[in-house]
Length: 106
Image (cartoon, rainbow, N blue to C red; front, side, top):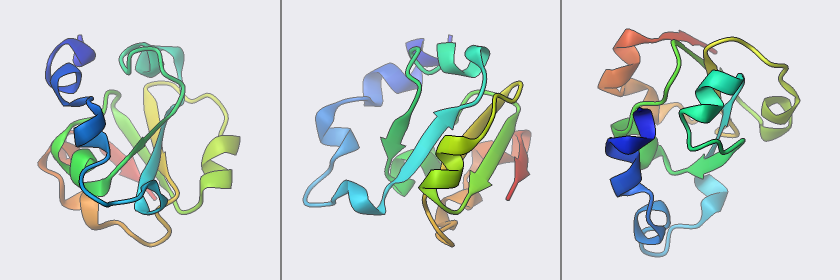
């Protein structure tokens, strides 16, 4: 299971909020179906830094990148999809190796 591997060891307060970095520059990660939500510890939403997102694959076959948070919160259910929202035009994390195996839409 996705959480039993990489994510369990990296979801710590220190890792999610390193140094003086504030969550204002982070991205909203929202699973859009029950399957991807189950693979994200059952959490309906996370806020992650671009560095964490770049190095830790998200579940699902499809990644939907949305510029603003409000649109990300309004998205309907979508099979096997995770939305990443709130970064505006900050797409510095999309060079992540793990995205090569996903369908990505912006």
